[in-house]
Image: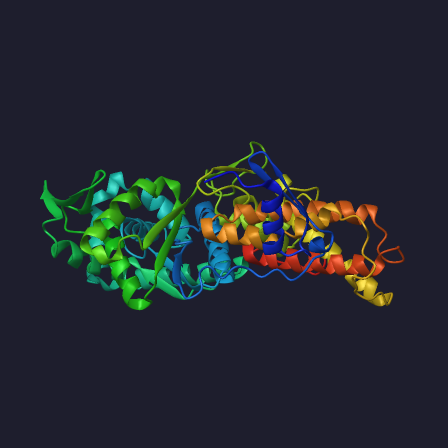
Length: 471
C-alpha cells in the first residue's frame, strides 16, 4: 500500500466523521491527531453500545455457606459480581443472578456437632468449635456428615433444617443491604447427587485410584472420595448441568477468589470433555484477598473479621449511614483490577478527600444540592451561554460511554471506578472555580451540573454503590 497524501487523508476523514465533531485533523508521521470541536464537547446523552444484546448471561457470585459466617471474601465476590451483572445489563444482556451455596459437607457436620456440644452457641461459633475439635472427634463428625446426606437421623435432621433456614434468612438481610436480588439459588445438596451421576456415566474420564475416583487434567484432582462422597469438583459438574436446565444461557460467569483459579481450570476442562457443546461457555472471574492496614481495625471474633462485622463497624464509623458504609466497602473492592489483593484502611475508605466511595457519593450530593438551589433561584437549564473554552470537566464527561463499554467487555469494573473518581475530581475543581448561579454562564453551568449528576448517579448504580440525596 502506497503512502497516502496527508491532506487528502485528512479531507477524507473529515468527511467521514462530520465537520461538527472535529475541528481539525493532523497527520504527524505515523500518527493522526484529532482535535474535537468546541461543540463536540458540550455534554449530550451518551448511549452505551449494546454489544451483548440478545445474549443471556448467568453471573454466579457471593456463594456463602449456611452454618458458617458471611466472610470478607463473600463481600468481595458480591461487590464484583453485582457490578459485572449491572455492566452487562447496561450493554444489552439478559442477566441471571445466581447464588451457589454449600448446604452439605464436612463444614455442616462440624457445625451440627459443635451445636450439639454447645446448644446456646450461634451457628458460626458452633462451626468454629467443631472445626477446632475435628481431629479429636473425627469419627463422630464424619458419622454426622453421612447422616446429613442420608437424612437418616431425626435429631440431626431437625438441627440441620433449623440451622440452614437461620443461615439463609440471615444472608438475605445482608443481600438486601448490599443491593442484590438473586434470581436463582443452587445448593450442593442437589448438585452433589447429580454430579455423582455424571462421574459414574464417564468411567473413561474419571478413574479409580486408591479407592477414590480422580480426574487427570492440568493436575490430578479427586472427584469422589474413598467414602463415596462427591467433592466440590463433582458438585460443580452437577451444578453446570442444573444451571443449563434451569435457565439456558450463552455464558456462565463464576466470581470467586483467585486461589480457586487452578481448580476451575480442571473443572472446566472435565466439563468440556463431558459436554463438548459447552466449550467456552463457562468462565471464572477471580478476586484477590482483602488485607487490613495494621492497627486500623481489630476483630471482635478472634482472628477473623467477618463481612457482617465489617459492615457493622463501618456503619458505626459513618455515624449510622449504612449506605455510606456499603459505598466505602464496594469502592475499595472495585477500584482494583480483578485478581489483585487490596489493603483495606477503614479511615481512608470513609474519607471525603478523594479515592473513596463516600468521595463519589458526596460529589453526587453536591451536584444535586446545586441543582436544587438553581431551581429555587429560577435558573433555567440551557446551552446558549456556553463559554468559549471547554473545561477539563467537559473533556472527562465525553468518555463515559466508552469506559462503560470497556468495563463490560473486559468484565473489569475498576475502569468505571477510576473514571468516576476522575469525574468527581474534575467536578469539584470546576465547582470551586466557577460561579454557577449568578455567573456569566449560569444556564450552561446548570446544564453541565445536570450532566454530571446524571453520569455520577448512573455510574455509581452500575457499580452497585448507593446514591444518596444528602450526606
